[in-house]
Amino acid sequence: MAGIDSDVEAGREVAAEVLNKVVGRVSWITLNRPAVHNAMTGGQRERVIALLEEASESIGIGAVVIAGTGEGFCSGADLRSGRNGGMVRPAEAPERTMGEVARMIRHGAQRLIGAVLDCEKPVVAAVNGTAAGLGAHLAFACDLVIASEGARFIEVFVRRGIAPDAGGAYLLPRLVGLQRAKEMVFFGDDLTAREAARLGMVNRVVAPEDLEQVAGEWATRLAAGPTKAIGIAKWLLNRSLDSDRATAFEEEAMAQELVTSTADMAEGMSAFAERRKPRFRGW
Image (cartoon, rainbow, N blue to C red):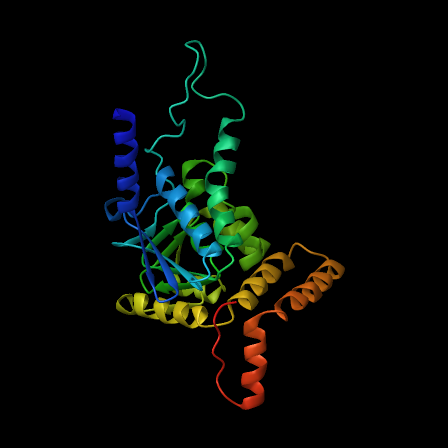
């Protein structure tokens, strides 16, 4: 019973640290550890992944917003939350053996970034403050990024003497080009929201008091759209830089084949013919 009670308590703690609400057809996922600028624990990471998977599966959800409380979006992984997961080790074993770090990255940060990229619904990042390391890559993996004027993006890894992880070496060159990505990673300087927008990493910069409203408006508009068409468009666009032309053209043709069977496509065509606004339902 003690083990069950501790699991329940841990679940409650994670639920308090990752808030979730569904408003209309929008799922809001909010990191809630403001005292540490939303440094992400393993439990939080797993909760966010689960919520993104739920959004993909739910017919009632059309878009997702990822946000943070307090003055930080996400300051990276919480390095104090423990990395070994209570692993039992022989008395003579070293603290870390070969392969453990790679396994931790694959099963941890990379799974989180993959969950955002693979979510079948559009994901909007509402960046209210510092987005560093894992937090910066979490924002960059989102489909649209809205940042408050005081937000900062930091490739913090070089400051710790480590290489970028959480998909950074994959995401950054695709967003800003290879040379600029190297500059960001090698120096680890703070990047303002305005500079990030100029480089194409942020879609819009707004006043802090307008961030939630604008993010909500964008997500609500996305959620009112043809969900399946937007989802497959996201898949095509995310794959485009990894595909040769023949593959990209074939996938585009097959994607169009799939969406032409949806009810939303029929509604869109009817609305066009009748010169009215379409009423999409998400299927």
